[in-house]
Image 1 (cartoon, rainbow over the protein chains, first blue to last red):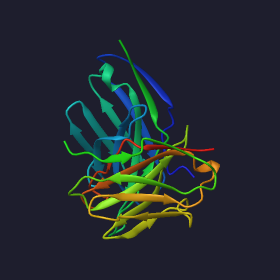
Image 2: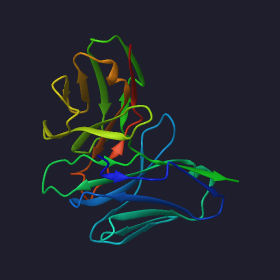
Image 3: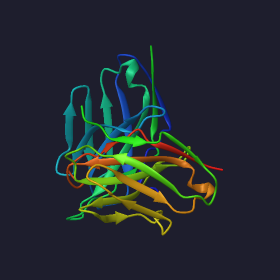
Length: 115
Length: 115
């Protein structure tokens, strides 16, 4: 039961170009979305998030776009740098009105930045 | 910059043995989480903890698992009788408040190998 789907296991982008990572979700209860970056043998590192009341959030080179009607979000990285090579996870959380909610993760996309 | 720490980095145990994985969340955070990632699979939520009690747990978190905050700084995950399929990376995370509208910060993980 894949509630969060990242359909591209890997993506190769040239240095300096734009990287676009995609994520789809099926659960209508999700209202908060996050992107994490992970290097081998390390824990996920938070990159950027967006709540369902917005359609765009920008932080430096990273921008997340949310299309609620399509249940789709994307992460844009521009310009791409060699240090961006990592696995990127999309994650989502429902609004439950209280308590601590676990995140539901996608399987990840391995981004490779080529010189 | 404050970070979540986990010990040990690697734990090897025999099937049927008990293991305790330890985490020190970020000091002003109130919500704590455990996740696991089986090799080649996605990160999966196990349990969340707030105010000294479990807030939410997944189907994976069965009776062989337990969590505890034994003092003001540590947060532990105990697996009572390990199985081969418990072999995975276990990540601890913490957040200032509940996950919606607030990111979770992850530790580097403990690699558990059950022989």
